[in-house]
Amino acid sequence: MREFNAEGPCDPEQHFTVMREALVRKGIEKIEKGKYFTIFAPRQAGKTTCFQLMIRQLEKTAYLPIWISFEDFANATVEKFYAALEHELKMRTVLHGMTLSTHISDNLSLRRFFDEIKQHGKTLVLIIDEFEGVPFAALSELMHTFRKMYHEKMLHGLHSLILVGVRNISGAVIDKASPFNVADEIEVPYFTKTEVDELISQYERDSGQLFQKKVIAKIYENTLGQPGLVNAVCRELVEKICANRSKPVDMAGFRRVLDYFLTERIDRNISNIVSKAREHKDFMLKVLFGESEIPFQIYDERIKFLQSHGVIAKDQSGAVDVPIPLYKNALISAFRPLINGETVHYTSPSERFDEFYKENEHRQNYSALYSVCPAPRLPRLRHRKP
Image (cartoon, rainbow, N blue to C red; front, side, top):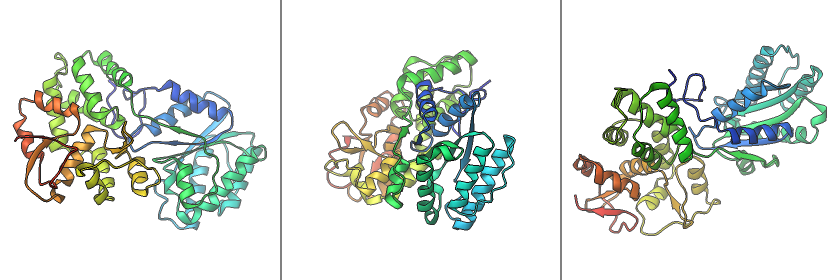
């Protein structure tokens, strides 16, 4: 039977998968038009799954889709970067019956490599994942090369280029090197409530075990559809807490899972959020515990960094907020030793968590978890007596 997947891209044959047909169709349309564009979203938001679903469709056409990753390239010298890039490209073109002779040693020879592909009569779609990993010393010349190739596509075999990362790559490059002016993009959003329903319904059909409707609603409310979190919570529920498939996944099980995620589990997704938040510790203390709202301004480097990594977002009033309740509670717990003053007990700023704690028959356990020593005034937090 398929399973909920919280590590890496989803394979629809092995994992319960939201197919996101509209998003995939949008990407295919850009490819058919020969666009060079970016796909961006925070970690575990489904970027890789999205472009792999595009690749599945492209493989049924005359296009030649090739996917490489710059994940381990960041600390390489320029020479080692181009050597590794040559290895990645040739390893994958060989799989498609092409043996290319061009040696890639710099940006100019890289262009000749794509010229040689055209001589083989191939229409190449190149997807570069983890594009932020390109070494800074090579970034400017590499982007100049892609820019030139974009404007001269009739001369070489690179029909469409997709750069994938946690940020809009056009913005990231402007920060560092500037030349890439092809600003077309696809942002991969979190799951909608309907998509969470669809994901869980796949499990229900395959396993015969039902989720209580209220549990599905709470999963969405506490994750806001963050794909990695949704899958991790669902997997914990069905594999450990509510493993008896003759009984439905109920609210008692959900409470236990939420407690586990907030107090015991070292979740890779949540740990990454806490780690990124700590890079701007003083700013996050103001967001979590400050007495006034902070206007969301994307040209503030702290805000841009934290927003691109999924830590913060702009709320309906235009202020900086940590929108995902699971993230917010983890951050409050992680940052509470940094606050001085008298100890108070509080719940999350989210009304959704207020309701959860009211329902929780073991709510006294949370008194210790959410004890902090805050600054004198915490107007953004909802206080309660311990």
